[in-house]
Length: 446
Ligand code: HEM
Image 1: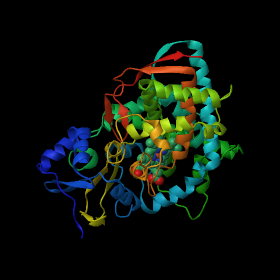
Image 2: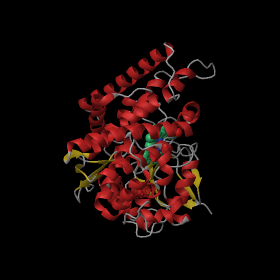
Image 3: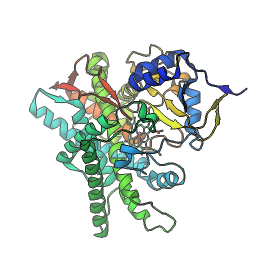
Image 4: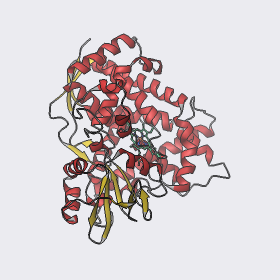
């Protein structure tokens, strides 16, 4: 029999306020109390639905017609309105099918090898400098944004632009810090800061510049070695069956500049921080890297033998999923499992709490890469750092391959140490971000 999701006993307004102001603790409480999920009623509004059960999450993600994404509005639309991370329906299907070939097997190899080269160069510079302090997150951002621009958009944006991008992302993080209005946009109209408007303009202008450069290169007959995503988008303009809304290519470029690097940079920052706090695991990553990597840059071919490093990365994505929650809304009254979800409900699927639920992960607070060597279907179903269904991350192969090589290369040659409290102050924006960088000391060990 179909029924409503249970409601928490506290008044709806109290829950809504806690959700907006003390989000993580609120969600942890909900995760502990409700096996499938809860509907928090909010006076005069459709409910706020939190799904805590992996089966309901999987089903909701499989049905974008009933549970579409929340459209980009307000500040987010100032960067991009219709990129692949925001669009739905026919436009999303058209765009996903145009760009999908840019993320397949050969492109993963190109991405991995480019990442390997870039991290090899960076590691050589670090080795020359001896011990030094740095912001680990800034380092990882500058690495991943340059690789993403080179492989996805056909142009390395260079060091100065990469540093500028890190600053834009910090400003955007402040603008998008999570609160009630993130899920219920009509509640509180929030004015955007001047700083944010400048950052959004900067990202749009950089996107246009990259498009112009690629157009010119193609017109001059300069064919890329591996057909990148931007080239595919530009070629599709000539297809009579394809119609782009205004600014579509710019929206895609801006979207991929962000989606293509930010989560990967965060995941590297978190994994290296966890390895700093777990020296035994770090030693095992190092021993594996010493055995597998040769004297030159790490390459895609090395991946098959970096088994423990991959497990460590997977485990870090469990404890610190850069996309800490996935958001949807109900498009009409809809059944989900044995429950009915009310039209207009805001739906939150908190990967952070599901990944730390002892029903699915033994000793969930422990950093235990070896858990990924044991078979456990319950755990697999609850683990969703790249989401699932039609909107599942298109860059998952890039992220897994590139990050594994970066970790192996860095851990082989350096102790990267962060303080015990380095990950205590995290901000919820659409991604989970360190509030104020992650100070680290880098010391060569070989
Ligand atoms: C550790 C790294 C990454 C994580 C944790 C991650 C996570 C995610 C998640 C959770 C989603 C689904 C969002 C939803 O269902 O609403 C997603 C979608 C997406 N990701 Fe990633 N991502 C990562 C790396 C990348 C990379 C490297 C790229 C690009 C090269 C990328 C591009 C995208 C795009 C375009 C989408 C939207 C796909 C669609 O709706 O068709 N991501 N990602």
